[in-house]
Length: 238
Image 1: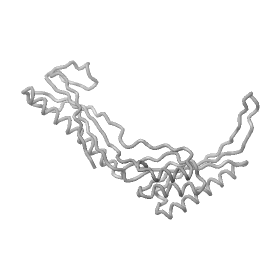
Image 2: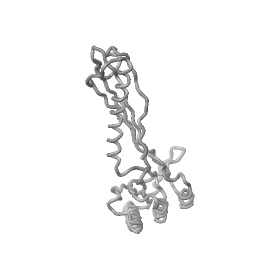
Image 3: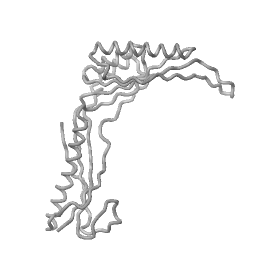
Image 4: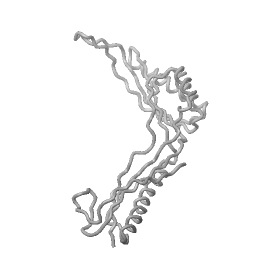
């Protein structure tokens, strides 16, 4: 894990108008700093989003095919040690599928499409390629995205938040010493949460050959994900 406290800050005059900022400021000498933090860590889990679909002349037949594919997927993933509690499978949705003509002709009913959204949490990233292949072997081509994360994400977010507060105070102490003033009590705090984590990789329809090619790519698993935070603090100056 690599933790970095960024040096970016907002330096404001010792006395400023309260209308200049959204955060409340006192009508006496004060200092406003903005603390930032960034923690970079390697991911230890991945979440796969999969869409299981089937198109049949009757909605019941489409539903049954989707349910069969999902049951087979559960069984296949169990062989890799993926537990059912790590798989979220939504309810089946069925709807008619029409083909629309170019000249305003009456739509043609192609059949009924059934769909279930599946979310798979994988805690052994070395099995990612095998898991993708198992999914494809069940005739499921729509692997929508893979998102990387950390099991202790809440703890890391808290660490980033506290580091941002510490950074704001550290900057305030340095600046107050630089102008020969004593840093007083905190007057106001404005929390400015940042989005942390990783950007998911989107795949859409994925073939077995593409999965094999991806498994050989060293950049397949994201190297690092980041947890960032920031806070603005107003200090009185004595």
